[in-house]
Length: 187
Image (tube, rainbow, N blue to C red; front, side, top):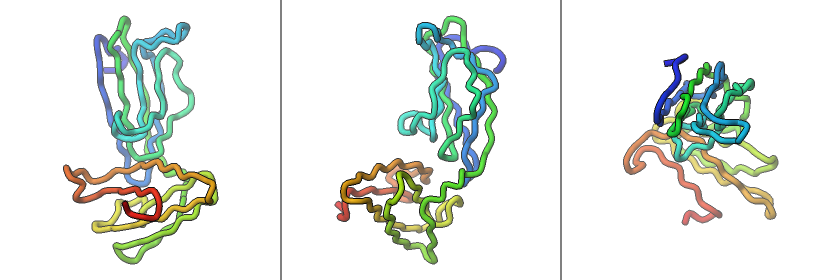
């Protein structure tokens, strides 16, 4: 459609997925999403989500106006969702970007190895953030993989968990699932 403008009421999404072990780097080439930056009003918005869901994925950025971002937007997962929400258009909106799959940024987190399908790890946090990944990452997890991680911090510290995952879909989570417990007990 580019370089034509999206006219009228639009609610459109695009999902970008790159191979396992890669991140998405998205660079705007043109951005003209209807808004009035002088009055800080957006009549339309272009939202980039770090994942495939507008409901559950964190927002990487929300854009409107005519100022094209100069820095690339880099996901922390292999999938991003681009969502144009335009319900009060007067002059229309247009945008253009390019994307590429880039190597994960070397964020190794906890080194893990497992010789069979059952694995148990104890992770003691000694930095402000770390990444916990399944054995064999960035490849897909092996079928039947059943891992447990006990994440520990100092007594006075709290643990914040942000999950970035791409699980096999099923109606009752019969194939892949993640359970998080608060404390050492499983209840």
